[in-house]
Image 1 (cartoon, helix red, strand yellow):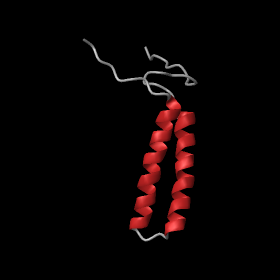
Image 2: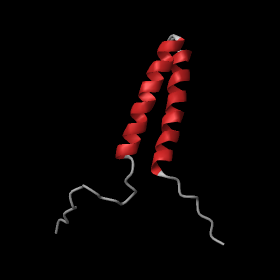
Image 3: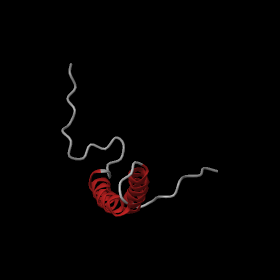
Image 4: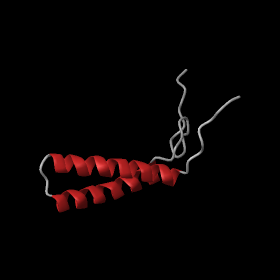
Length: 75
């Protein structure tokens, strides 16, 4: 029997990464003394930026060279 991990949509993966980084940034800013509202807003904005970055640029699988120049072999 061969078990594989379930397939997770890329948007869901990007959302999970964004939530994790949002919490990390929010609690980190609170720990160093940033005010509650400022920490929440900055973490929310940065979480949205992280979501968009991962959603747009994080889709390539290993070994995929979409949009990359072909490698030249040097004789």
